[in-house]
Image (cartoon, rainbow, N blue to C red; front, side, top):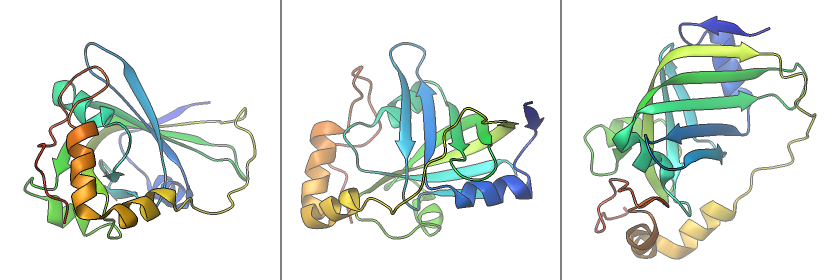
Length: 185
């Protein structure tokens, strides 16, 4: 049975910290709904009603575009081991870009990643747990290093070019807020 909370409880924070993958959903008022899997060491609960996650360079940038029009965001974790549990956080988020005030303070919570593109800062207004009885058991083997290795090999100039060519607008043509000339450093 689902249970609702006004924010993260300590047990929820521990659960989030143990998971190797989470999912983020956003939608602008018009266009496609986006649902993205996220991994690596990229999410932090900063209090009962605050969640931040580091967004690394990727093929799209839908979340940033959606948040410019509608700040709604849902983040979900589910257990693939031991006790079945699904945890969702609902709220509103903003994108913090490298050139935005507050970037350095928030980025200090994460490992240094050359491909760090944005940090999403979410104000959580509801946390919900549900059973997860239908979620299969799966074993975690190891993190995938492909994105990290690509970014290291590409270097700052190539990443900046990639952002300018592929990450300044969404698949629906909505601006993401990344300036075409934003330096990667």
